[in-house]
Amino acid sequence: MTKNGIDVSEWQGDIDWSKVRTDFVVIRAGYGREITQKDKKFERNYSGAKKAGIPCGAYWYSYAMNEDEARKEAAVCIQVLKGRQFEYPIYFDVEEQKVIALGRDKVSAIISAFLLELEKAGYYAGLYMSAYYLEHYTTDYIRQRFTIWVANYGVQKPTYSGTYGMWQKSNTGSVAGIAGNTDLDECYMDYPKIIRDSGRNGLAKPAEPQKKSVKITVELDDHLYSGLLEEM
Image: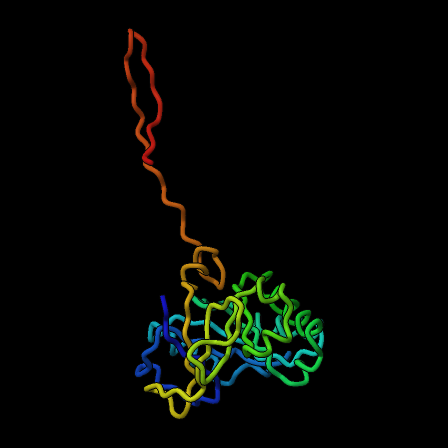
C-alpha cells in the first residue's frame, strides 16, 4: 500500500485546498519553544485540508539544544495541536546544523525527550530526518522505537537502511492549488488505522462490537438445563 502525499507550511502561502488532490498532508504546526512561533498558516491549512477531506499529520521544526529545550518545544507543540484530530503522525523535524553538531548521543537524547512528551500527551509521534542524519546522528534505540519519515531526494528509493513509514522524495513538486514548489511524499503504512485503533491524535478508539447472546433452555431426561449462547 502506497499513499502519495505532500507537506506544507506558511512558505506555500495561501493554498487553495479545493483544488488540491492528495492522499494526505503533513502540516507544519510551528517551530521553536514559543507560542508566537506557531506556523502563520497552520490554522488555515488545517481547516482547509479538513474541509477538503484530506487526512492530516503535523510536524514541529526544532531548534532544541538539549533535552529541557526539547520538552519546552513539545509543550508548545501540544498547545498548538490541542483539540484537533490527526490521521497521520506528529513528527519532530531535526535538521538544524548546530543541533546535529552536538553528535549522535545528544541529538538522540533531544529527539527522545520531545517524542516521549508527545506520547504522554496522547499523540502518535515520529521523527523526520534526512537519510544521512538518521544513519549517523541517531542511535539504534531512536530508529527502532519511533516511526520514521526519511528525507532523501534524487534517488529511486531512500539510501537509509532502516525501517521507515514515509519518504519525502522531492522538494520541487507541482501541485494544483499551491503556488511554487511543494514537497512530495510517499507513505507505506496505514497510519489512519494504526492511530485510530490506538485512540491517539484525538481520534476515538473504535468500540468493541457487542456480541449477541440468546438464552436457551433444553430438557434432557426430565431435567431442564439453561444457559447463554453467544455468537462467535
